[in-house]
Image (cartoon, rainbow, N blue to C red):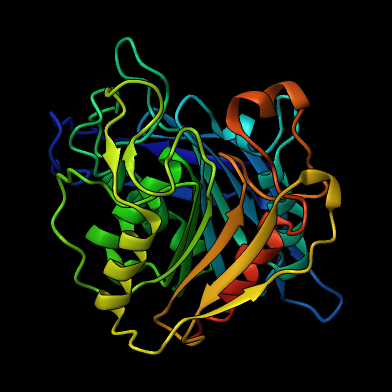
Length: 336
């Protein structure tokens, strides 16, 4: 079972600015081998992970859920961080990968998943062209156009365009925020993990309501919780504080209700960090923070645990929450 793709796409380039959208399309179709009538007759079902697909020369993985021909299902984009890859994000390299849990969740909840690769600029690591105007190591590709192109081409396979979401980590989380800023009409909610809004933005201010879930550690050595320089040195740009990013999206979403803090049960004592939920309105559009107190530049997960050596570099990893489950709980509550 595999996907068949025919693509003719030219990806535009930009020098730190938004570029023109993709100028051609791609035809995507399922092989006949994955189309199977059920016992009732006439109902098409397919399910599984299709690896190493391409669109305009760019690679992605896709999970297609079981569904009837006229049924539509939600779609979640999963975006890796700078220096990562689609393979790394879902654990194809054999290393711990909290985002891998999305595959089990997608099969259970019958979701589409799109897990694309970013691009590698000359002399830089693979990543995304997010809105940080002072991140000199970011690629200059039209990543908004690429991701929206993927959405457009997968839609005929049964995607519910009213329930499209993005979960990204670090540079991928910043890219999720760019999608919300520039194409907010297409995305119901985004969940940036260890990410924030740019301090020096090349994008316009957000204007369309999009629900946002931030998951950030207060001791993050790479994406500072209180804002400032990303990573070591200034080439990765700067971000605003998590508080400022939340306040901006609260204003865009018209959230005026007072915030309430709730301590998440500390069930994984050995991680030496806890989670506080900061939220107000629960319905769309809203803004929520899962603040990982004493947490670092990592995704929460009790099942996918990073090595102690890795944690010496990125900081503590929380084990009280499973990332995919928590993000999907937020996404599924956003309607419509």
